[in-house]
Length: 313
Image (cartoon, rainbow, N blue to C red):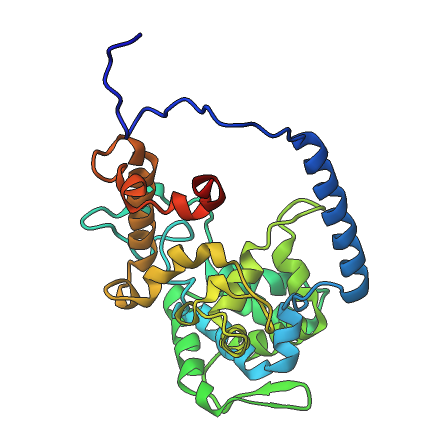
């Protein structure tokens, strides 16, 4: 017989009680069949509880002035995407973890110039239109400083923007071709052509929705819809789903940090929350090796509640 001392934190005593037969294959198969049938039946009867996707076409038809304002902001570089930094551009260093600029280390992997990619290039993909073609030629032949002046003049007057008879109207002067750009881009968005132009990226079958999603997120329309559904980050967004259906409760630990200081007010919240979760994950991974912590389940004896029938016997 071994003289090695019994270690309650590591060793498990030999089970000397009775045994009951259990066919895990049979039980698993029955569970799979039952859940599969229920899923098909309930999906057929009720469909998906989620709302339909929000497209740029939906946005431009529901809130054309919000779309047009976002479009001019893409041109003047004041949107979130325009100033985001890596992986889209070099406009900022991106989020930091202490002194470490992690986003900058990754670099620009998905280069996006909001003026070109969201406005000018989509307009160039439209069928020939004399007025638009002339406006594009004027824009391309102008200097950068002249383009900036036109955009700034339009931006100063965008508070007067209205939408009448299918046209974007702004009381501005010396804005060059910018009024034509914004009006035609809004019409393009309302037709659904802009969704297609932003998704297609050189391949016929393209599933890269990065650009339309970024464009949508830069406007106010998507945020308004999200707020109504309690999907904003300040409303525990990632945990929720649309309507009154329960969300992903297993994400509470991650989204929890966004609701408390200093994460709730930090510009680097994403990377800070990520680092916190990585630290907690490492602690959890090595929990069986940490003296004291690994003994907590044995000392609090919660297991006796779970297996109360066994311990009662």
